[in-house]
Image (cartoon, rainbow, N blue to C red; front, top):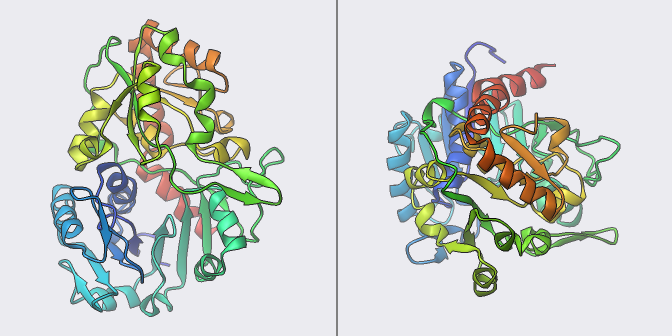
Length: 386
């Protein structure tokens, strides 16, 4: 591999999932590699099933038109306006500024990075020597590999394996072993794109979340649940603090009425995530993040840390979040406050309010030290070479 200037193709999920948070999650891989001086392109594949979301209508079908418009604006705004392509398998055609060159670029790439493993590895990538799977959903990904032959087949097409489950293979981590040699990684953040604005401790503690992303997974008699399984012990938090607690809450099954009755403010996540700027504005207008994690991340002691929480930190906003084992890996107590119980969550909220300025400064410092995209992705490349 050319270490100084590799040709890297990031396979992501942005046209099919045109939401602000998801866009940043995948986009910052391309931005991070580009900031290291590499020749970077962003590709996305429709896959072979209807998977294009339209937040305006709520539809999921094969039509990428909304996502293509969303992508064109997003890529242009971050300096990657001519660096992307979308393959529509349903129509057997390419879209985007690289459409006519896409296959040639793919066959000559040095590295393909499949973020979240959400893109198929088509024939034009088969001769790329380094094909990286980035698992952003630890425990659930490994269970899928062992229970879904199609998922296992896709994983086997990769040569390198990284996971947000940073405790993987640690003695106290119970991420199921699927046979792949996982190595730890975390979300890269394009720090220059996240402006720190002064905040006030009198605003809202917020998060953007799905109540249920999909059905719980079961493996060897053990259940790995969603945030809906983590949330019940914390239902009464708003009644125990003077702080305002708000959820930008997705999922049709979410008990919005019951949450409002207990004092939670509920806002529409499609408004918050309409584009990458509305998402940033929501974060920066918050006091801090208050968030639970998927039950499966917590119970497996995975070490997962949210890409959304990393964005709060980059914005100079503290994070009060349920511990998944990440407290072994990141500094806590200032900027990041972990909890396991409702009492600990309440203590974190009050600590943020009482030392707000110090928490905000520490939040950005943690982002710079531990989530800087240049550092995160330079380490990933170094680990591949090791």
